[in-house]
Length: 535
Image (cartoon, rainbow, N blue to C red; front, side):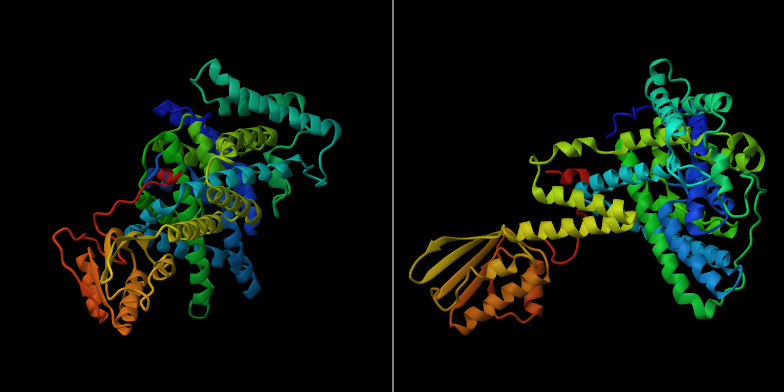
């Protein structure tokens, strides 16, 4: 997956040039997501400026790019529709309100250090996430092959020109580093293809054509002044708090999941480690200020982040440069940016798709358990068809948990270590929890067993209250059958909980009893990284 992203240390020159490349790629994306939310393009562009600058300067992952995103735009669009239905001009006010509330929720999430839960995401979910994301990025480029005026698919010479410029962009990105790495190949490709299109193919679609599709911008001009802070007005906070809080919470969770998943992906590419909780606080602060200054909010952008890495951007300077450059484009450099051919930006994104997709996952069929293939495919399909990365991750985690529970439930072993006419000693191996208690209970037949029974838990572990309840139930069955049941090698925590539950069973206390707790994580417990979950 990461063959196109060579591991290298960043420097100011690379960060500055990479940031400029990213700023160019941010323009059409921000405009498109503003369309999706039903707001003016400048609302999306200024969101990219504020999100990019604040997260780059204060976030937990240097080199990661944030801005207006499709997932946030879809949810934020509901606030716009809801506000417009209540009164003219209220759509934007509701949008800014939910973005600011979402920012507060994200800050709280980070302060409570809840970002650590991302470590629970299994590696198959991560593979499905990046594969689905690559396909979504690919599909998002297809509308660029339509005529900006008629909306019809390109054909004949216009299609040949578009394909040729895209292919040229990709060739330059791939082979220019063989000549020199002093300048990012993506930036060279955009400038070169832009000049070719300007002098020879003036009819090819440009950023100006994308802008011209926006309501109130028929001339396709990119211009605007720096916004001033303003609190949302005209909102019935008392009557609308449920809608505002629910929508804001959804935006906050989608943003956190996308940002932390992107952070983890960049961690793997750069072989470094970001700070998830710090990123949550920075994302929340950026969203709050974005709403305050008239932006639509956003989160980490996987495509632009990968462009930044491929162009050599590794430090905070790259993200800061991208945000400052984008603000400059909006206020001063609009006439130049308007001339950039869409084909050049599509070519850059196609190379991102190639670098993002986990090609090695296609070779895993038949080599890894079918359950892991199922998780990868499920997460990929949910990502592609729902365009909802947060839901895709949740589906993957739930499927992985169910698979783990199913597999673990089949690995509880009971064997007889010693048997006489008067006594039988059972040895238990495996994890005793809610998924395995049925299999555990089926091994013991109180009525037909010998008078004295011993169950040794030395090679087993009681994981939750369901396991304790199963032990209690077996003890009760043997007591009613008039048999004597004793348990050995239970932890002190298990013994204490059985006593509190009133279990009528003898528990032997031995010097080599294990020391673990039930139904809660020990402070010194360590969580394995998602990559270690690969079988």
